Structure formats: structure tokens, C-alpha cells
Length: 265
Image (cartoon, rainbow, N blue to C red; front, side, top):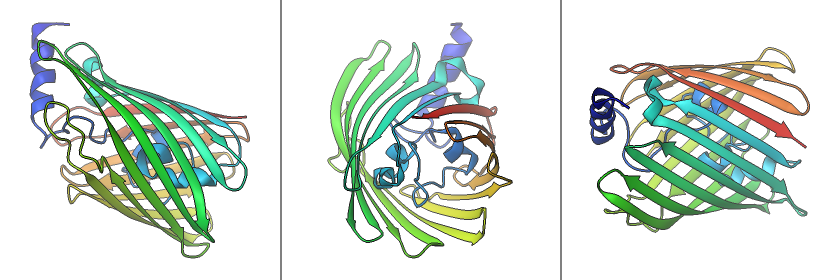
């Protein structure tokens, strides 16, 4: 990696107004990114691990999913994840995930153990226990653990409400990671069109629309603030395999492309 590339990466990582701080959202998952990160109240696939683990209860079959993206087309800012969800009896699900961000100069690794269950009719609870590891060149290693809790409530067949609290124990990795909260709403406007809206701890608004053209093709459009960004997504699926692609712009940096592959057993 060239000296110029290293300088660019370091500048991006130390300017949270442009990007993010350690272990903050990178909008993992081609489907959520296509929706501008608005996924807290939808959360009906493996991506629920990252946005609202309560939604894992919606899964009915064992599911494996993998995602890859390079933020702003910079190889040093690659983000990769692999997860597996296993439904159990009585509306319970366990899931495992690994997310790795960065490459040489800066690297994060997060391991997830997730559990979700039905509380009572139309309401669900989920929890993540995470192992965090941070490696910054010439600064050394740091590790800790954290806990996330999510809640999902289906008001009726057309409206759902979601909430997720991340890092509620404020883990320490050189400095404390702040607890983060996100709330969301999902509304089925008409059959095959879903409107999604999330509001997160950074007072950032996420808005997304998902349009099912038919049983196999889905279009997505998203918008988020701070900084203002627009996203576009496309999904292709059948009964066993789903492929999702998302493109996100940035006001000062290059585009981010993300691809996800999901296999249902």
C-alpha cells in the first residue's frame, strides 16, 4: 500500500464527520444499504443481527449469508461479514456472525452470538453478545465485549415498530464506546411496496423504499443524513438463493459498492 493511500485512510478514519468511529455502523448487508440503512423495523432476514436481532424470529429455515463491500472504493476500508442463523422450536432462533473491517493500517473484528425469541403475540426480543478486537498499526491491540438488545413489535400486518440498543455496557477499547440507540418503523403502503424509516443515536435519519416487482426481482431506494447520502439496491432471489447489490454515494468521497449472497437450507 502506498504512502498516499495510507494517509488517505488515516484521514478518513480520524474524521467521523466524514465516516464513522470505531465499531460504528458501516451499513452491512446489500439489502439494508440499498434501503439507506433503514432496517430496524423490517429486520426479517440474517441482516437482523446487525440492525435488530429480535427480527431473527422471522426466519423459518437455516440461513447462511455473506457480504462484501469496500467503503468509498478504498481497498483498505473493506468490510466483510459471514453469518448463519438456525431457527429452533417455539419461535426461537440462534445465530452466529463474524464481521471484519479494514486491512493493514486499521482493522476491526467482531464476533456475534445472537439469540431471539417471541415474547407474546406479535412481539419479539433479541440479544447479541459480541467479542470486539481492534488493531491499529503502531498503536497495538485492544479487545473487549459488548451487548446489544433489540425489540420488534408488529402492530398489525401493515405496520411494525423496532428498537435496538447497541453496546449497552459501554465497552472499553482504548476509550469507551458509547451506547447507541436506533428506532424504526415499517409501513406496507400497498402490496409489494414497503416504506421504512429509522432514526439513530447520531440524530441521523434513514429512509428506504422496497418495491417487489415480482417474486424474483426487488428494487430499493434509500436516503440518509449526516452526511446526506443516496443509495440504490437491486435484489434477485428464488426459494433458496438471494443475491443483493447496493450502491451508495458520498458527498465528499467515492461510491461504495456492496454485494450479499444468501443461501436458505
